[in-house]
Length: 471
Image (cartoon, rainbow, N blue to C red; front, side, top):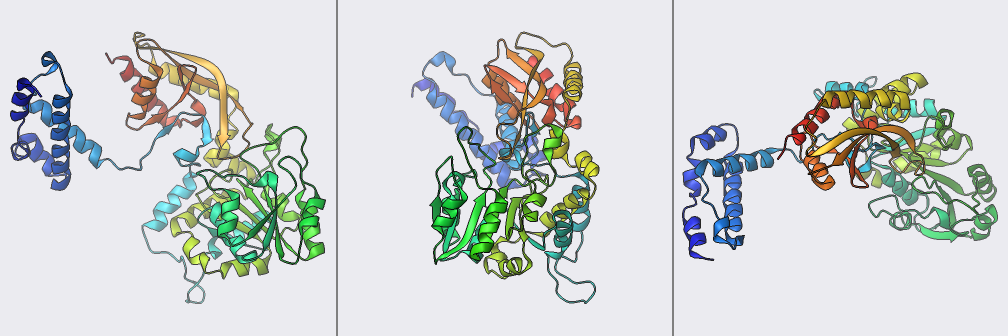
C-alpha cells in the first residue's frame, strides 16, 4: 500500500464512533444491536478492501461519515430482510420449481390464516373426544374425487414413492422399464429412490421400447412389485413402445403381485379438452384397479407441496403403519391448503376459475394481449437511452415437470437493451423490491404477463420506469 492509502485507512471512523451517530442511534431503537454491529463491521471491512485494492492514487477519495452511515443503513436493510420472500414471476413458467411451484388458491390462504391462529382438531376426534388421525381431513375428499378405496398424504411425492417401496418391496425385487428410470430434479433419481426404499431394481426393456413380455419374463420368486413411472419431465419420440397401466395391472393379478404407478405431476382434470397434450388423469389410473398411485400436490393439482398416495384399502393401511410415516407426515398448514384446494375440485368450473395454476394454463392469447397492453400503458413514455420497451409474441411453459414439449402462445413485454446490457437489466429487476424474475433470450429481457399477477403490474411498471432513469 502507498502512503495515501494508509492515510485514508487511518481516517476511517471507529465502530464505537459510528454506533454513536444520531442516525444509527435511531436505528438501534427498532433493530437488534447485534444486527447493527454486524452491518457496521461489514461496511468498514468492505471500505478497507476497496481502498487496498485501488492502485492509482487519483482513484482514492476520502469517505465522508454520512456516506459511511448510508452504507451501514443499506447493509442493515439487507441483513434484516427475510431470506424467503415474495417475488414476481415474469418468466411465463407457471409451475416454476425454483419459485415455489403453484400459488395457493385464496380459499386455502384464508383457511390457513383462520386455523393457524387458533387450536384445531388436527388429531382429535370431535365425536368421541379421543385421539384421531390427521389423514381423515383429506381422505374422504380424495376418495370422492378419484374413486380410490383409501388414501394418505406425506410431505412430497418422492417421500410417497419411498414409503410405498419400503412397505411393498423392501428386500425384494421391483420391476421397472429402463425408459422410466428418470431423474425428478435436484439429482433425485428413481434408481436411488428405489435403493433407499430397500427395493432391488430389475430393469426391463430398452430406453425407447418395453413390452408386457419384458415384464413377465423378469418376474421371479423374489419379485414383489411391478412399477410404472410416468415420464412427465421428458418425452421419448419416434420408434417407441410402452406398456399400458391396465396391461400391467392384469399381469400383476395373474402373478399375484402389487402394481404401483408414480404419476409425478398428477392431474385431476383432462387438459386435452383445452387443446393441450393428453396426460393420464389420476381417476383414469385408479379405474384400472392399480394397487397404488402416487403424485404431487403442488404441480398440476395446484395445491401445496405434498405427496398423495391412493390405492387399495389394505395396502394403504399397511403403508400408514410403516415407521417411516412419522418422519414423512405432513403438517397442519399443508393439510389445510390441500383440503381447501381439493374442495374446489368438486365443481370443475370452480376449480378452473379459482386455482391459480389452472387459471394461468387456460389464459387465452387475447386476454394476454390485453394484459401486456395494460402493462405497456402503465410504463408510459420513458427515456429510451437505456432500453426500448416493446411487445412481441412468444410462449409460456407449464413447468413443474409436466408436459415438457407443450408451449402456450403468449404476448410478451420485450426489453431491448441500448446503453444498459440485458444481464444488467435482469439483475436490476432481481434486486428490486419485490424481486422481478425474467427471461433472457437473444440479448433481450422478456416478461410474460401470464405469470404476473394483476396486482403486480404496477410494481413491474414502476421498476422499469425507475430503471429507465438510471445513469
